[in-house]
Length: 553
Image (cartoon, rainbow, N blue to C red; front, side, top):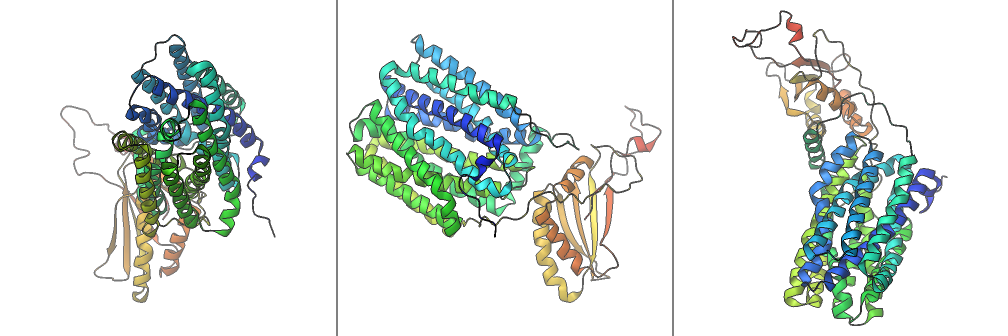
C-alpha cells in the first residue's frame, strides 16, 4: 500500500526546493521591512488609525489587482511574471531605503511605498501559487501549499525579532536595506530556471475577456464560492492581530520594538507548528473541521491578547493564533487549487486572494478605527466575537473534501470538417445537440442537464437552452452560443476528465443509433451580403464568412 505523502514530500522536487529556500530569504527581508515600516509610522507621531493603515496599504493592492494578475498568469509565462514582480519590488525597496536614509520620509510617503510593495505582491502571488502546481505532482500539492505557508512563518518566527533588533540598532533604514538585498536570491533562481512550456494552440485571451472568464468560472463553481466567502470573513476579523500588533506591544504590554518583534515571532512559531502538523490533521479530520478549528483557535488568540497585560501570556496566545492562521489559510488555498483546472487556476487563486485580502484591508481600517475610539483591548474582543460568528458560516458554506475531481484536460476534442471558410474571430457560433430520451428517463435526464448547463456556462457558453420537440416528445435539443470560432475551440479544450462523466451519462440515456447528432452553425443576418453603399463587398462570400461552429458534444 502506497504511503500517503508526508509534510516534507515536496522537497524531493529540486525546483520547488530551490524556489522555497530563495523565497524564505525574501520572506525574511519582507517581514523585517514590515517591522521597520510599522515602527517608523509610530515614531512619526501619527494616530492609531495611521498605524493600522500600514497593514492596509500592503493588502489593498492585492484586492485591487489580483484578478488582473491572475489573468496574466494564466495567459502568459508565469515564471516571467513572477520574475518581473520581484524586480519591481527590489526597485521600490531601494527607493524606500534611500528616502528613509536621507530623512525625507513622511507618513503618506511611507504608505505610498508600502502600497507599491503590495502591488508587487499582488502580481507575484497568483503566478507563484499557480507555479506550485507545475513544480510538484498533484499528490504533493497540499503539502507544498502548507510548506509555503511554513516558509513564510519560519521567517515570521525569527524575522520580526531580528527586525526589531535591527530597528532598535540602526533604525528603519537598516530594516529597509536588508529587505532590498533579500530579493536578489529569488531573482537569480527564477532567472536560471527554464521550465518546459506546453505549446500554445490558441492565442492568449484579452485581459478583459480573461478576467471575465475567471469571474464566470468561480461564480459557477460552488466549492470555490464557499472558500471566497469564508476567506473574506476570516481575513476581516483575523487581521486585527497583525494590524494592531505594534499597539499591542506598546500599549497593552508596555514594550518597545524588540517586544514587537518577539510577539510577531511567537505568532510565527505557532504558524510553523501548524504547517508541520497540517498533514497529520488532514489524515484524521475533514477540511471543514480543520477550518472551524482554525476560526475557534484564532478567536481564542485574539480574545486572550485583548485581555492580557503580560508579554509571555500574549506570546502564548499568539502561538495558538499562528497555528490557526496557517491551518485555515492553507486549507482555503488547497481547496481552490484542487477545485480549478490549470487553465483558470491563476484567476481562481487571484479571486480567493482578493476576497481574503480585501477582508484584511477592510478589517485593518475597521480595527484601527475601533482601537482609536474604544481602545486596543476592546477592539480585539470585538474581533474575537466576529471570528466565532465567522466559524458558524460553515453551517451554510461547507467546504468540500480534498478527494477532488479529476480536472486534467480531457483532450478528446478534434476539429470537425467544415465546408465554410472561417476565421478565428468569426461568429457567433451556434451549437445544437440532439438527444432521443425515453419518457421514463426524462427526470434523470433533466437532472444531468442541469449540471451540464452549469458546466457549459462556466466554460464560456452563452444563451444555453434545452428544447423539447412538440411532435416527437422523445427529441430533446441542447443549444448554446459562443461569440467567436476561437472561443468555441477554447470552450472545447476546457473540458476536463470530470466534465466528461456528464457527457457519458447523457449518451448512456440516448436511444438513437450512434452518438447524439451535433449541428455546428454560424449565425448570420439576412442582410449580410447586401452591398453597403459606403463600402465594397468582396466577390467571394467565403472571405466574409468568418467562422462556423466547432467542437464535439
